[in-house]
Image 1 (cartoon, rainbow, N blue to C red):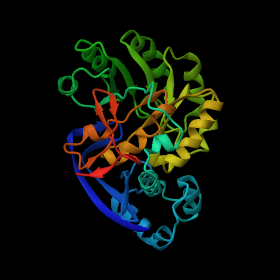
Image 2: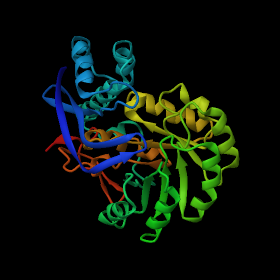
Image 3: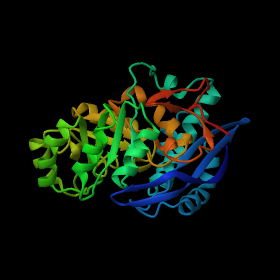
Image 4: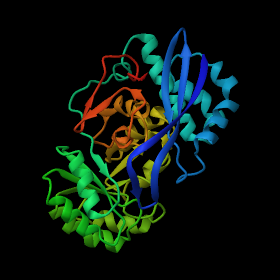
Length: 338
């Protein structure tokens, strides 16, 4: 096994603003694992919201674990993940990129798409939303019109004009809306806004309160006119049980969880608890998005528009056509370099 790491510096299509800040350049790390002349690819999305997960820091972590990684015999990626967790479990963003590369290589070496090796079928797949970052109302309308015809739009909120934004966008489309406040609201705000947002065609609210406000979420889940989905409150496997009774569903991010392997366990546990299941993305290329694509048959909702939000995708893989996932005729996760 040979490990290769490549920096991905990807300008955003538009400055991407959420309640936590603005991104204009996304600097991620591409992970390549090569065996028997075949390469598998994964992506480490950088983030400082959940820790110091910069491309440089993740590169250093993977370099420090190079000898262990390159000594691995790739059999079952889930078993490999368990063997590598003691070495990289403290940096799940880095572990995610490695896990995706393992799955991609696993499928390519076996001549099958990863979803098929996982025993899944590409039918009844959920549609992805397109995300509109916080901006002036006119610019948010323009961003939506730039990708006119999508069936679902996710609207980032957390401003003093949240209701006005949704009302303005509703004038230009009949599409389903999803709202992501990224922890910016209080319980009282959420309960008060929910009926009006429901009237405006909003499907659900994602992470309205701060991660630690469990008491507030217990109120919201009982009194909100709209379902609520956990994001920042559901980072790792241990969080799933805590979300039951405080949310109607969970949004799993592969990078936060540590990869496809723990995500599959989180999905299974969420189903046992009666939770709706969503997977979301970060700002990432099709290397990261294609990993999400392999798990689509297991989901109720998906947000996999990360590669659409960057100006130029450096990777080929699973892509979106107005919310519909289009799978390449390729094995593994379907990832190749452009």
